Length: 141
Image 1 (cartoon, rainbow, N blue to C red):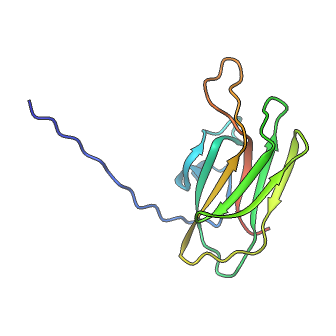
Image 2: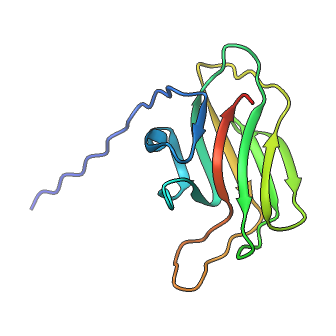
Protein backbone atom coordinates (compact mmCIF):
# COMPACT_ATOMS: atom_id res chain seq x y z
CA UNK A 1 0.00 0.00 0.00
CA UNK A 2 1.35 3.40 -0.96
CA UNK A 3 0.80 6.30 1.39
CA UNK A 4 0.99 9.88 0.36
CA UNK A 5 1.46 12.78 2.74
CA UNK A 6 1.14 16.42 1.71
CA UNK A 7 2.02 19.55 3.65
CA UNK A 8 0.75 22.92 2.54
CA UNK A 9 2.47 26.16 3.41
CA UNK A 10 0.42 29.29 3.34
CA UNK A 11 2.07 32.64 2.77
CA UNK A 12 0.07 35.09 4.84
CA UNK A 13 0.11 38.76 3.98
CA UNK A 14 -1.22 40.89 6.82
CA UNK A 15 -3.68 43.63 5.96
CA UNK A 16 -3.90 45.39 9.33
CA UNK A 17 -1.47 47.15 11.63
CA UNK A 18 -3.76 46.66 14.64
CA UNK A 19 -6.07 43.78 15.53
CA UNK A 20 -9.02 43.89 17.90
CA UNK A 21 -9.53 40.38 19.24
CA UNK A 22 -13.28 40.88 18.74
CA UNK A 23 -12.83 41.27 14.96
CA UNK A 24 -14.09 38.28 12.96
CA UNK A 25 -11.10 38.55 10.60
CA UNK A 26 -8.50 38.51 13.41
CA UNK A 27 -7.94 34.80 12.70
CA UNK A 28 -6.26 35.76 9.43
CA UNK A 29 -3.37 37.39 11.29
CA UNK A 30 -3.10 35.14 14.35
CA UNK A 31 -0.19 32.76 13.91
CA UNK A 32 -0.32 30.73 17.12
CA UNK A 33 -1.16 30.54 20.81
CA UNK A 34 -4.50 32.37 20.77
CA UNK A 35 -7.81 30.58 21.22
CA UNK A 36 -11.16 31.25 19.50
CA UNK A 37 -13.20 34.29 20.52
CA UNK A 38 -15.10 34.10 23.81
CA UNK A 39 -18.32 36.08 24.06
CA UNK A 40 -17.48 37.52 20.64
CA UNK A 41 -15.17 40.13 22.13
CA UNK A 42 -11.92 38.74 23.56
CA UNK A 43 -9.57 35.78 23.32
CA UNK A 44 -7.52 33.77 25.77
CA UNK A 45 -3.88 33.17 24.96
CA UNK A 46 -1.73 30.31 26.18
CA UNK A 47 1.89 30.52 27.35
CA UNK A 48 2.98 32.32 24.16
CA UNK A 49 1.05 33.97 21.32
CA UNK A 50 2.19 35.27 17.93
CA UNK A 51 0.38 37.75 15.68
CA UNK A 52 1.38 38.80 12.16
CA UNK A 53 0.86 42.52 11.51
CA UNK A 54 1.39 44.90 8.64
CA UNK A 55 4.34 47.18 9.41
CA UNK A 56 3.42 50.83 9.93
CA UNK A 57 4.71 53.39 7.40
CA UNK A 58 6.43 55.34 10.20
CA UNK A 59 7.71 54.27 13.63
CA UNK A 60 4.84 53.53 16.02
CA UNK A 61 4.56 52.01 19.49
CA UNK A 62 3.20 48.50 19.92
CA UNK A 63 -0.01 48.56 21.96
CA UNK A 64 -1.44 45.53 23.75
CA UNK A 65 -4.75 45.53 25.60
CA UNK A 66 -5.01 42.72 28.14
CA UNK A 67 -7.02 41.47 31.08
CA UNK A 68 -5.70 39.30 33.91
CA UNK A 69 -8.62 37.49 35.57
CA UNK A 70 -8.54 36.43 39.22
CA UNK A 71 -8.64 32.79 38.10
CA UNK A 72 -5.12 32.82 36.58
CA UNK A 73 -1.67 33.21 38.11
CA UNK A 74 0.11 34.92 35.21
CA UNK A 75 1.59 38.26 36.26
CA UNK A 76 4.61 38.86 34.03
CA UNK A 77 4.12 39.64 30.34
CA UNK A 78 6.92 39.88 27.75
CA UNK A 79 6.54 41.51 24.32
CA UNK A 80 8.85 40.77 21.38
CA UNK A 81 9.03 42.09 17.85
CA UNK A 82 10.48 39.75 15.22
CA UNK A 83 12.22 37.63 17.91
CA UNK A 84 13.70 40.68 19.66
CA UNK A 85 12.54 41.21 23.25
CA UNK A 86 11.22 44.74 23.76
CA UNK A 87 9.44 44.90 27.09
CA UNK A 88 8.77 42.83 30.19
CA UNK A 89 6.29 44.02 32.77
CA UNK A 90 5.03 42.45 35.98
CA UNK A 91 1.51 43.40 37.06
CA UNK A 92 0.45 43.58 40.72
CA UNK A 93 -2.67 41.45 40.35
CA UNK A 94 -5.85 40.86 38.38
CA UNK A 95 -7.21 43.71 36.28
CA UNK A 96 -7.49 45.44 32.94
CA UNK A 97 -4.13 46.72 31.65
CA UNK A 98 -2.40 48.03 28.57
CA UNK A 99 1.21 47.77 27.46
CA UNK A 100 2.86 50.26 25.14
CA UNK A 101 6.42 50.05 23.84
CA UNK A 102 8.51 52.89 22.52
CA UNK A 103 8.04 53.56 18.80
CA UNK A 104 9.13 50.67 16.61
CA UNK A 105 9.78 50.44 12.89
CA UNK A 106 10.07 46.85 11.61
CA UNK A 107 12.50 46.34 8.75
CA UNK A 108 10.08 44.45 6.49
CA UNK A 109 6.55 44.92 5.22
CA UNK A 110 5.23 42.68 8.01
CA UNK A 111 6.13 42.04 11.61
CA UNK A 112 5.55 39.26 14.14
CA UNK A 113 4.53 40.38 17.62
CA UNK A 114 5.05 37.68 20.25
CA UNK A 115 3.52 37.90 23.70
CA UNK A 116 4.59 35.55 26.49
CA UNK A 117 3.42 35.05 30.06
CA UNK A 118 5.22 33.56 33.05
CA UNK A 119 2.49 31.09 34.08
CA UNK A 120 -0.60 29.35 32.76
CA UNK A 121 -3.51 27.67 34.51
CA UNK A 122 -6.18 25.20 33.52
CA UNK A 123 -9.53 25.97 35.18
CA UNK A 124 -11.75 23.07 36.26
CA UNK A 125 -13.53 21.55 33.27
CA UNK A 126 -11.24 23.27 30.75
CA UNK A 127 -8.26 21.39 29.34
CA UNK A 128 -6.64 24.52 27.83
CA UNK A 129 -3.57 26.06 29.45
CA UNK A 130 -4.63 29.70 29.79
CA UNK A 131 -2.38 32.69 30.35
CA UNK A 132 -4.19 36.02 29.97
CA UNK A 133 -7.03 37.53 27.94
CA UNK A 134 -6.08 39.69 24.96
CA UNK A 135 -8.38 42.44 23.72
CA UNK A 136 -6.10 44.22 21.21
CA UNK A 137 -2.62 43.89 19.67
CA UNK A 138 -1.04 46.24 17.19
CA UNK A 139 0.90 49.31 16.19
CA UNK A 140 -0.36 52.72 17.17
CA UNK A 141 -2.39 54.32 19.93
